Length: 427
Image (cartoon, rainbow, N blue to C red; front, side, top):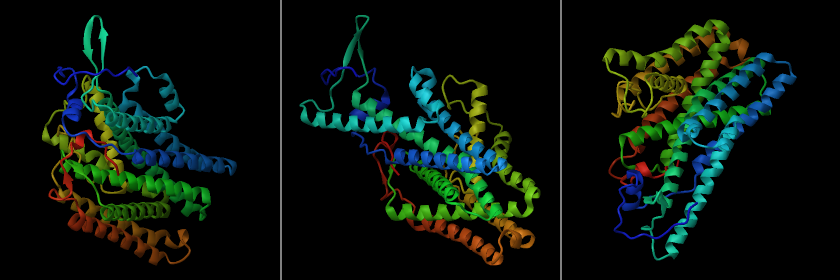
């Protein structure tokens, strides 16, 4: 890193980007230890390691189908995680062969996590150095290029911006890992468990990591919805609010996936049309609304991106949106005709419609399971288990209503005007 040289307060700051200028001239944003990045990396490593262990067990037992599908869900989700981090950090346009090689080895999240921790430690060191020096936050560094003086980014502002990029990249990775990797893996391992009527320790560990990853992704969806509603404000969830969201999402995801698995195990291949319909409705709904509105593709998604690239990006976003709604409520409504791609209004009708449809689907699937295959899949208490699954889903709806009625952050006492767009967020 270049040496920092002192400059005067009166010098021009025209070449400093507006984001960093807001950091410097406005209140200094606070940065915290990247616990969420560490947690996302821990979930990634735990799920991949446990999946590889189960792949080896299945291979030794000569279970080809179990080995194949577990491998597809494991490495497919891992590859999408690597691509997410590469695209967000724009590594293809940078000279970082070692980082790309680590992503090729599926170890990209580990390298990014270590990089984020190093940046945090450097920020602590610079902050301590500022307090000891007489020039606090008004220093700048300059170099001479071609005889002209070029103003560079301020070191602390640049480090904070890089740390923010790591936070955003890992949030996106956590969502993709949760709903395009962990949900299929958890669903399939549940199916294997009910089919084999065994739950070895390795599979239990894999299912636990997948469930935690999916729950964490659902919590991120709630945080996104809250942040969209209170734009430009920093939202801090209290422990009681976080616990309520966690219970709500865990009950919702667990009951939903168990019902889907029991229904599929009861009807075998005859359940495929129904499952495809459940998945295709949220996949096609945003495009139907987009075509009916007669709008054009959003023009502000990325600069210098082609029409084909925009279409591909919107398709990937739609697939992620459908994956989220397959297992739980997305907390936001996708609107392809909107420049922001998300409906910022509090759409209570969308939430009520989603839970009404899902509750009806769950009741139908539980009834089919009870009538067609309950006693063959579960030797006893099939009626009691069916009733418990419906009660569990109703409890998740109850915790959801409790959160929105009494614990949802309000503008007056929970939203803090702290330059939220430039401050790393922690969950």
